[in-house]
Image (tube, rainbow, N blue to C red):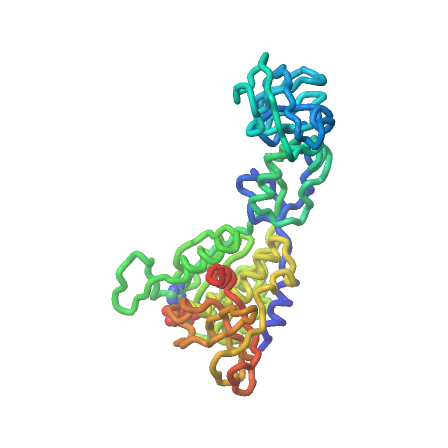
Amino acid sequence: MIDVVEALRRIEKAAVVSQPRRVRIENAVGLQLREDVISDTDSPPWHRSMMDGFAVISNDFALTKDNKTIVTLDVVAEIGAGETTAIILKEGQCVRVMTGAPTPSGADAVIPIERVVTGSLDGHVGECVSLHDPHFRFGQHVSKKASFFHAGQTVIKSGVELEPVHIGLAAEVGASHVTVNAPPRVSIITTGNELIPNCQIPGKGQIRNTNEPMLSAAVARCGAEPIPMGIARDHAESLRALMAQGLAADILLLSGGVSAGDYDLVPRTLEKMGVECIFHKVSLKPGKPIWFGVFQRPAAAPTLVFGLPGNPVSALVCFELFVRPALGLVSGQSIDKQSGSHHSAELVGSMKGGGDRPVYHPCRLELSDGRLFVEALKWGGSADLLGLSRANGLLVVPKNSGDYQEGDLVEVISLVSRFRHESE
Ligand code: AMP
Ligand code: MG
């Protein structure tokens, strides 16, 4: 049986980055950019007033002794945000400007409105204003044209994972659409004769379909697009019908039916449909029965197919260990970049050593004074979702390891979003 590292290596080998797609910037957050974004404008696009006040010639102020003198100027124009003027400022003149307005030719500084000492505070065209600015600096309160970047400059480099700030920047430079790695489309098929939709009351022997909404949520949390396809029953016809549709997606997730039982038809049905098995069973607990294969699609990247175990905890642990990295790979991220969720932590309490498989045990991680501590949680095994719901990480107990004592360093995987959230 292969181990987790080998399984990941095979997934990495099979994964192909999806075709880039052009999307509106409003829909691009979280996606990886596949082209440079180049500005069509200078920023700022003009010499811009950063204050409500009066655009002036610095020399009119700088030449006064120690900036102590009150300077009286003629107000010759008024410019609001969105307006321009053809006026060229001369000595002894000023222009009333609003924040964001272009400063007129000849002006190189702005005196804030609060510095008006006489005359009406409004200082309208035709009036004189007396200004006194004891802290006056040359060029103050003017943001110079193109001082941030200029037209033709690359402002976002290909490869960047787009954050809201990049969406704003793209909007500023006129990029209404960007080319990105498309979010992978992920079909989800749950299997089992015992399953009923989770909105129903279970009859004898029936259980609610936990995995479909849970895996859909996990896919969405990764920024990918879940396509829940409903329940397939444990016979070949039912499985084939849903699989035929599911194989059209970038990734197909199945849950259940991958163990060794008579009703575990998923692997053989997939193989009959042309999906090549890359591995079946991985040495880990929970999640050992996991199946992984590749389906060659005509004129598209191959579909990666995961047969996850039916037990919900096993399904979610396998999602974290294998499907999340696969989603990253298909979206253009390297495995290395994704290993950020692995840490070492100091054990609180003691812990029994591992058996013949590594165990991924639900745990609580806590940061204290820059040190990471971990405590294993009470957990009932591969069907105990409540136990897992209290965890913010998985403690990795290697196979055949000895018992652990308080303070020992152990490997942990943070279940990223929840851990970050709670340590904030
Ligand atoms: P299987 O992998 O099909 O042998 O299922 C293993 C266990 O997981 C059984 O107890 C199933 O009833 C349970 N199971 C399978 N699929 C689901 C599901 N979608 N939601 C909740 N439990 C499931
Ligand atoms: Mg089953």
